[in-house]
Amino acid sequence: MAFQNSFHCLLQNILYTGSVWTMDINGFNISDPLAALESTVITLYLYAPLILSVIIPVIITIILGKVYCGWICPMHLLLEINDWLRKKLEWTGYNTRDIKFSRNTKYWVLAVGIIVAFFAGRPLLALIYPPAIISREIFYKIYNGIYGHGILILVMIFFFELTLSRRWWCRYICPGGAVYSLLSRFSFLRIKRFNDFCDNCGDCVPVCPYDLDPMTKELGMDCDRCGICIDVCKPGALKYKFNLVQYKNIRGTAGNKKSNRKIDSMTNNNLKLEQALKNNTPDSLNRTE
Image: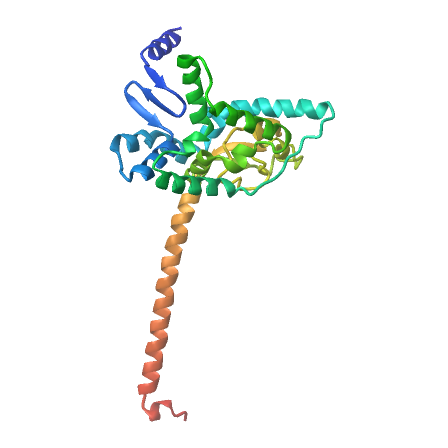
């Protein structure tokens, strides 16, 4: 009871304003990395408060991986509803499709969007980024009583994914997801497969929202640590694991390369010295008895 009262008092003292796109908690600003990136490129100015506002999201992503996409982004909730509707459509006999695209598409969307925004002098990716759209639409509805044009983008994404390509936006298009994927390249938290408990049933593969294969040793940057694969698998087959070994391996590999270069250099010098001594050796010493 004492803990509950303390936690309740803590929540009462937290002053939250903003949205999932950018927020203020007790005077501390937190911004989506995409917002900071686009603003910095457009203005060509490193605004200190804006840079500081992305420290927490960046650190969390580096440590835990792409958790924003799987646990915080409001679009994830909408697309989970979409997955449920797809199953209902398939149950009625409707043949839903799942068209595949290149996973690199989202990086092209990010790059082209940043370049165009730079020349246009205004943020453009924020116009199609669902967290930003949802944040704006909520304010439009509260203060103006109507929804803006952004709701049309959400509806188009919703129906395209419902009928043609499951999780199309998150897998292939989202520029914010591209930023988080790059940040999570060397994240500590991973989902690891344990061969001793895995019976190769394959149940984890079809449930992955990103069409990844959890049965492989490396899920890659796109995994959002949602844990759905862990829930459907045999206990112990897949687990969250903090992987610190890879950084030791990276440093070890770099050290080995330096050591190898030193050894190669020493070997070459020894060969040159041996050849020089041989060339300067008197014939009497080279003559065999």
